[in-house]
Image 1 (cartoon, rainbow, N blue to C red):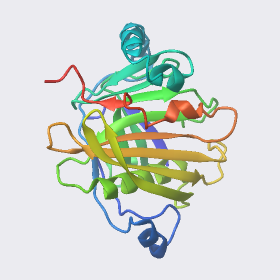
Image 2 (tube, one colour):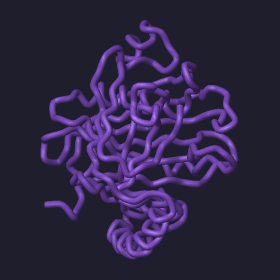
Image 3 (cartoon, one colour):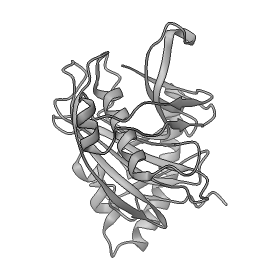
Length: 275
């Protein structure tokens, strides 16, 4: 599976929900034998070095605001404990009334950047078809060499309409991202789903799933990885949103466990920049 990061117009992601690298019976046991499509409907933006430059400038501004918010939440200790570096950055979705936090040492990409994975398709433009995508992206670290798979990345996408069961959505999205990020061609990774568990944060409600992943052996893959997904009804009730994190779970490049915490009440919320 090839990773992309692009200022694309829109992406639609679809796939049957099945346990990673498993049989149909495995899928039924995990509660993910059938499910929804996941759509990302963000518009174009910047990418590459321009996005990094913008992200650096945004990070400086966001850092001061995050510090003020952290002071207000000092009694919980969420911000300092989660970041491990004493401050957080806010990532604001460009097309959704949604924001989430990442530690200060992560890189917040330009708001218009869409990232994800694609596979070969001779009938698609340029010979590749996107399989999963997300926007409002933040990333951690670099693998180096010819490897484009980041040690950790977070972002959001939407199902495209209201009414999806958030339990099924969380399971399905987790499986799709595990297979896209840590598979290799027709070879699928092994993964074990835990959950779904109820998810509540700042008035948002839905379900949370974690996939513990054993990637297909590849020079750009870690030995162990994880995918975490929180799926919840949108603040306006017209969509189901997904907050997605995929990351190394072992090795020198793996982020701190606290970087990946979805349990904090400050982690995801309605954006204050949206009506």
